[in-house]
Image (cartoon, rainbow, N blue to C red):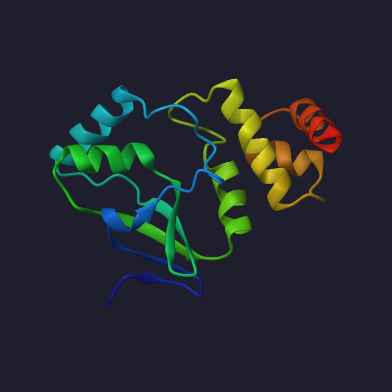
Length: 154
């Protein structure tokens, strides 16, 4: 096997049926954007490769962190596998990565998705500063402060 390898990261072709979207850590709440999927499909049909998706290997699970539009386009192209960057880690590490995956999104995020991403990041690293969380998720510190206050009230 000759995939790109680092201590905890491997990039290789991964079967689509092995990839799971864990709703407890995935910040997107709305369906994939059809226009974005079509643009990626056009890229695939022209012979170019989009960037690998990001999955975390948590025990025996391959959990999607970033790339659902690329997965949809790959399925539409009739493919059964996709290039994936696979990182080993915990569910909390996957949640942290998912929270920051769309900080500068191709597909605009809804307010509820930003709130969900902040909540995921807070659960993953509760003691992280508001500045770190805001930068990681791609939102303002005031949004982070507000969500942190709401979650403390429970």
